[in-house]
Length: 250
View 1: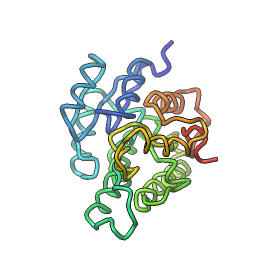
View 2: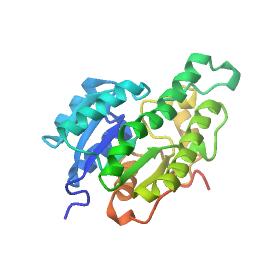
View 3: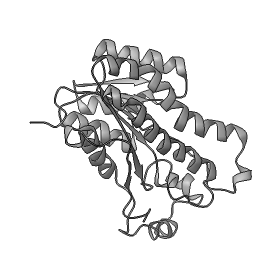
């Protein structure tokens, strides 16, 4: 039997990278999936590639009202979600902390942290009423073991990791499990920004040298972890920072 049979999942940032891989593996394992992304064309592409069990919705995850409207549409079209993956994220360019301007700082925390607040308000009441659910917040190894030049990004991901633990404690009595997945950097859209250098083979090799298993995270690595944590196999796991990092945080 498929591991997510008859489940309904919401994946933010589902139009590319880790989110796309998570949405596709969830659908493959029997879930109906709402693919949410700021870029509607990307969300539509992923939903079309998945097929009839997926819908695409454009949403700015940092906008409280927009999230309310998006989740209402999901519940009308698919039903009450069993799984929420807060995957949408952004970063600032790798640079000294005092060189990051205020607008960039605000954007990083709006997308990475406020989005979790917004989706909790939008979906936790329905999950409670429905008997429980699973929330996965995509944090980062940067929130456990920060790199120089990414101070504000690391702070936002540290918040994601801690929020996941605190939410897990508070929501356990409602049978809602909450965990953080903490990837090491992958070859996604933010890699060059996070490195603060052109994405050349030489610069990438220096970055990879900090990962004991000797490579970047692949979308499938994160998707497999997200599948396990959303499945009944992880029924007794909550409040965990789950590094998917090739040993980076050791």
